[in-house]
Amino acid sequence: MVLSITNYYNAGFIIFDENLMHILFVKGFLGWGLPKGYYEDCDSNFFETAIREVREEIGLNINISKVYDLNSKYTMLAFNKKEKKCNWGIKPKGFIKKNIIFYSTKIKFKTKFNLQKNEINDICWVPIDKVSEYIYSNKYSYNEKVKLINSINLTRNKIINL
Image (tube, rainbow, N blue to C red; front, side, top):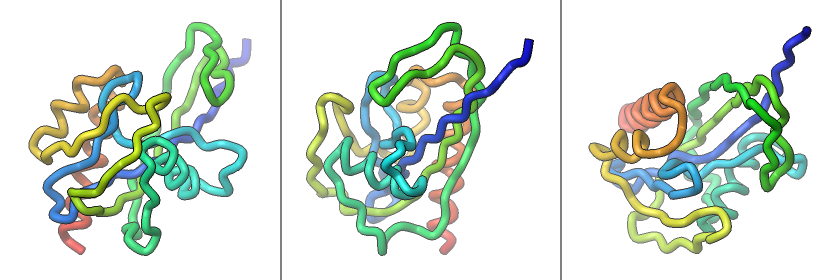
C-alpha cells in the first residue's frame, strides 16, 4: 500500500496595532486564531490568498504598501481518519500536509471591522502578554499552537528590530 500526502496551503496575516502591543485575533469554529484561509484556484499566489481571506473574514482591505517584507511559515502533518467536506471542497482521508504562511502589517487600534458571521464569530485585540492564552484555548494541535506562538514572537521581534 502506497501512502500519499495531500498538500494544503493556508495564508493569512499577523496584524499588529500601531504600537506592536496588540495582535488582532478572530474567533472561528476552532477557537481564537489569526485571520487566514485556504489557497483557492482564484488566487494567483499566497499573498493574494492572505489579502482575500482578511477582506472576506473581517472586511479589512490591507494596505499593500504597509505590509512588511518578511513572512513566517510552518508546516503541519496530520491524518484524516475519514473524508471531510469543507466549505471550500473535500479533505480526503489520509495524510495531510498543511503549509501555513503569514504576512504581517500594522493598523490603527481604532480600526472598524465588518465581520462575516458565516466565518467569524468575534474579533478582538489581544495584548502581547495574553497571546499564548488565546492560542492555547483553541482546538489546534499542540504542535500547531507552539509553531503559531513562535511565528508571532519572531515576527514581532523582526519588526521591532527593523
